[in-house]
Image (cartoon, rainbow, N blue to C red; front, side, top):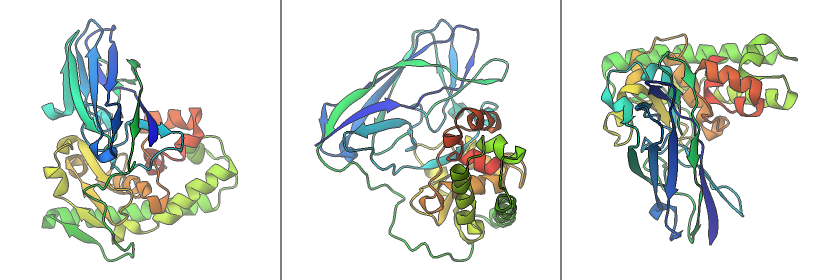
Length: 333
């Protein structure tokens, strides 16, 4: 048996009416489970403050049922392999949404409960009334239980497939969408080529590098350089799926840009925010493709520690080791 401890990577985006917000998060789980596929935990989130909170349904948070990476799971024998989805999402853009699916509202004293299958995982974030991104700490309890069987799940996306690159292809995409994707893929390849050229001549910390990846360190630099080298021209030899996100039971289509299964490096799933984004520039279609390509295990298994330029720059200063493994940091380079 494997004894595992469940914690939560937690920061929260919300709109607050005044300056006294408070949250408490409790996680309840059975004392044992046959394997991770049968492991259900209940997350209870309570507004302990005296103001109403309008919370963003960030795909990494317990407010979303998307199988992203929120819970931290560990055991004496190590940490199980993450088999969920990696998502491109911009909290500052979602905060402007008029779609109710983007938010959960909690009145003072109100509690909501969400069941999570730990075959799926996720994360959280918050915006104050002035529009500034901030974090809020919730009191949180970890939980210990025993899992007798497997610690990895068979998810709906993972398939046995060759990673041999083929021509650009599409699933469920209109002619107009295909045209937009082709343009974005070409621009994405150009972004990666530019990054590779820049990194190939870098021998010390320069502003462009240190802004996104922090103090120059040869080992960290080598990791970043390998990520971009691995990505190469993947954008123009990918299958782009325009339909899965529309029917995904736990994905917020209007406010999500894209997602991937990191173990299937031949497919990117596109969502509503992708189509509203410019072809190039900050949080663009081309940048989204760079972001998603960095997630693939074959390219470096880069994660989503933070979203957005401000938090990515702050991460570079505070934790370069995480910055070099942050997808938005790669996109913004």
